[in-house]
Image (cartoon, rainbow over all chains, first blue to last red; front, side, top):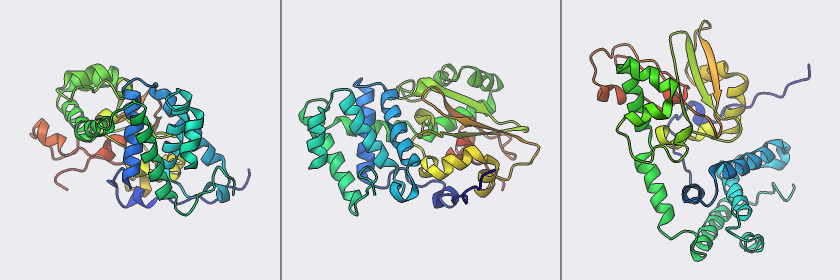
Length: 102
Length: 207
């Protein structure tokens, strides 16, 4: 059996504040709203967004601890949103590059 | 640091700017209007809340036949209740209820991302999306439950349900002691989001 890494402690809110607010910042709330609104209005199936979210989180989890930076769920959400917008031709690839470079 | 994961110091401000720019671009292109996102958020915040789940649980506690239908065909049973319209959209069509019994405790997690039964529980609490919680709840759920305050008897079977795009689980907790004679409305007020995720039990009002 290989040596196991020490178990990371649970996030504080797991044990101390069961009703922690859902959004820490307004941009997280907006990013959530945009992703859901576009799906609700038929611009892409929710599964498509979800797969991009799984990909983004999976890439973070697969990265080494020095590379991954601290956990910020809604950064992955935003990255997934940017990908799915390009996937479904709602924003062109070069427009997205310009937006991210700005 | 790689480009992919190189987080600049001002990551919060940059994320906020990215979202603003993205929403502005979608409005400019006519994909959405400036009211679309507020409308959807308003619906989520006002209508898709854990109150829906609490009403469903209270009905299950007071009507054994409903409780049976609820686990057999969750969307159909939920539709019997007078809940906000649109409950079947926004992933409500994949709702799946699992009921706790004296011998079985259910816990809902999502190991891949953060699938959650929005229509009945609202938006997930922060810790539900935490990578440590997700990994540990899958690997050592009994230990995690104990750390968060639920020390299950070893004789109780613990079932862990991994949510996905196709099954959005929620737990029907056990009715606590000391609630005989309470109305459905009074019972609903006792039901917590945590209990419907399975991370806690519903506390007895007498305690």
